[in-house]
Image (tube, rainbow, N blue to C red; front, side, top):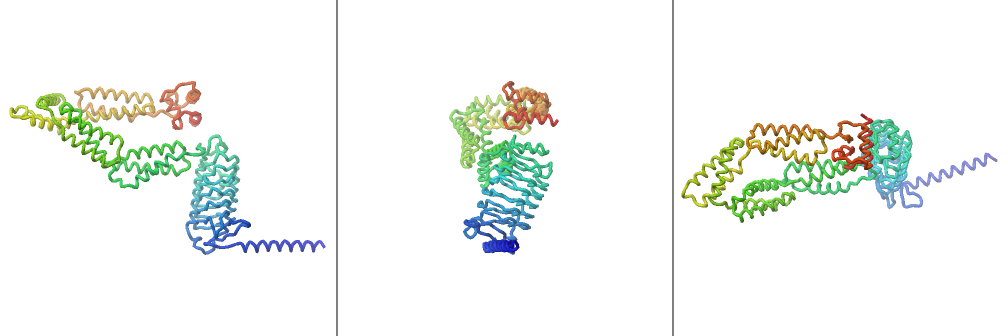
Length: 566
């Protein structure tokens, strides 16, 4: 009786198994090279595999449809695409919410994968042994658990970005990922199995300071880099879009160096933008650098206009030699030109018109009478007698010729007012073209280094800054000395360059500015944060260990770590 009952039960099970098998077989369908099944009582489908011998099997890129025969694709069945050796990239539709175990197992050519937002369930070993897989981006996913062996054996995997809502990383999830370098683990992750990662000292964990991942990294001998939960890339994106638009224009009218600079900064900024692992400070710095390069893009016509204005300024500097109305006209043209230069105008037509206006105003200048010519002649004679040796041979020759011609006009009884004006113009030209051998070079160096120290002096040690200041003051004294020789001027310029090159950066964390890191520095930083000490600008710069523009507890911690590492 018992045997009959068992036989009946076995027969019933066998019939049930046959019915299920038969139903499953009947549910399997094909479309567009994919095998799929309809999920019971829904309008959804599960992709089962690729049809054997289809073109999809041989393609380098696999694109899984979001809809197949009117059914929404929501599931990738277990083992659906396993062991294909051709696919390099897989495009998953946003409709997918489930990926079965070993669904993409052993795809030896796969190099990248992005997981859709709706994916909430992934089976074990889903991407195991994808030996060419280099990066995985889960940032858009709502996955809460990384299952066992998910990326086991992915020997080429470098970068991994896990989703913001992830809670658990199961055992052996990254077992055998010997090339793993960077992984972002969100603050929501509270459970990381100790076997999840094969021991690899080169792994750097990124995450929010104080989160579980930080302590996991430190406890297991991994590097940890604090990274904001959400970086703001909007400013960087805005300038990238503007730069991209500008770079698509014909930039042949612009100064090539500024075009090259913009291209280089654009390329660097785009890399930062596309790199998830960049800190906010680095993102902001990239935006600032690209913005500066964008604004520095300069028309060749602007350079020419600047040269025209510089030439006109020489006449304005000698405005007493010209009639009031013509000087006023020139001043107006120069003012308009300077506005365009200050704006770094990209309006080539406006720049060209301004250049023509300044040049025309210079040509329309009217010189004063014989007394003006005589006065200028006397000044030039005195200049040549006293300082002629400080100027180039060409400018001295030009001046001597002008003085000789001027003397002829002054001595000629028949000279008219027009003759005086004409010769005055020649003499002014010669005077404005007088070129010091070394004076201008030293003057420019003094201005350059003074401006630098005013803006950046606090970043360097007081001793090295004072050394440069000392040489600047000595140079100024030399510039004021009309008797200074060419050799002295050159020597002074070299001394300035040597002092500038010898500037020493303030050591990060050295808040007491004694040239070394010690516990005292960390104490100083802490007191400053608490309002118990007041830092000067150089001390604030030293205390800002991470260079984010403010002194916080993070800087104190970094200072302490640097002290300990020493």
